[in-house]
Amino acid sequence: MENLQQLFIEAGTLMLAGMVFVFAFLGLLIVFINIVLVRLANKYPDAVVENRNSSKRNKKKEDGKNVSPAVVAAISSAVTQYRQQHSAQK
Amino acid sequence: MDSLKLLWMSTGLANFELGQVIMMLVGCGLLYLAIARNFEPLLLVPMGFGAILTNIPVAGFSEVGGLLHYIYYAGIDTGIFPLLIFMGVGAMTDFGALIANPKTLLLGAAAQFGIFATLFGAIALNFVGLDFSMKDASAIAIIGGADGPTAIFLASKLAPDLLGAIAVAAYSYMALVPIIQPPIMRALTTESERKIEMAQLRHVTKVEKIIFPLGVLLMTIFFLPAATPLVGMFCLGNLMRECGVVDRLSSTAQNELINIVTIFLGLGVGSKLSAEQFLNGKTLGILALGAVAFSIGTATGVLMAKLMNKLSKEKVNPLIGAAGVSAVPMAARVANKVGLESNPHNFLLMHAMGPNVAGVLGSAVAAGILLALVG
Image (cartoon, rainbow over all chains, first blue to last red):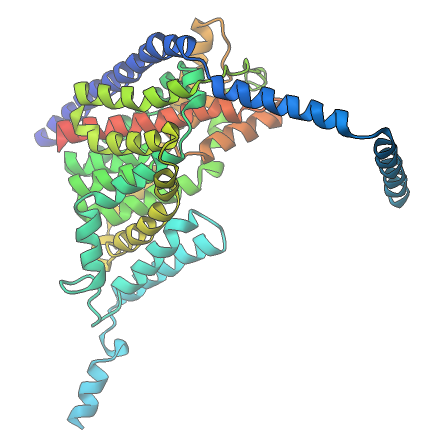
């Protein structure tokens, strides 16, 4: 019985120490993210992502310019026809 | 006549013991859960099959000279397999949601209470005649971390005899996340709390994602070197993913390597499902304690989120607190699903990934603490 009591005390100590340590460790990680990583993010922004997006956008714009009005009209009428058929089926 | 008798004695039918038959049925049960119910099939299929193989009479799969014996001692006793799996998990993990909202680390920390509270439960089971030492209790309690590799790693170090039952309990409860968590989440939150919409997460840069695993490793080296095997391999996997120059290694770690190791890990754990090690009262105790650990972890995660709402202006949906128990990404999906029930336009998945991956770190830290103080 005394042995069990000892084990309970040990478990209580372990719980207290464990939870304090887990919170302290992950809390420090919050400080690390807020201080180090956020500063790094401001100093070295993601240039690659911006370029990729802008190049995609440009490409889309260029593609839009190259499509002839006749093709656009043909696609639009096909889409309208498809939609009408689709709604009729329903 | 003698040779006929000898032939009969070499058959399985003549050598079967009742315990072996029961454990083969347990193995078949695991296969059923994996194949028919889709419960953690990647691990339960090899584990269930390993359980069948190890209980075959005469074949000696788990005795010296047997295949499963060597798989277990090469990979699990040494801790290599769970660590390689952890590297793969690191390579699959995106810390973006966590870095964008670092407060969610507190939710991951709070959910680890399930681990430490279960220590009491394990010790209390000594009253009903189950003889659990502090090492056993620690190995059982880590089930509350809902992290398979961490549970196997710690159990192999602290209580190898209980490894089979602990692994089965850990993976079973991870598969049962969608059943265990929602009632607890609903019971502890109000309808209006479940409807809380969270602010959109900021963009996280590549540099942040590269420095993060290095920072975590550095902190672990300084404050908890006992956790460096787990955290170190996790960070290596994550760095390989984020640095962008070793895509082949990253891809191998999160696909081929983790798949190969999972097969051996499952077989190795299955080899521990022998009748003498599994068919006893301790297994029942472990299964019960695992459920308690998991439920407490879920509850404390949710309660921590509610506390944060009281103290901070920026609102947190308390449902994402439940994802702090790790079980990536299932727990985050459950938070998202329960949130959508209350508000069909509220997608919490990305927000829940923060506490979810914080839970992985938290359970690795908790395992390190248990190793340092009890091991």
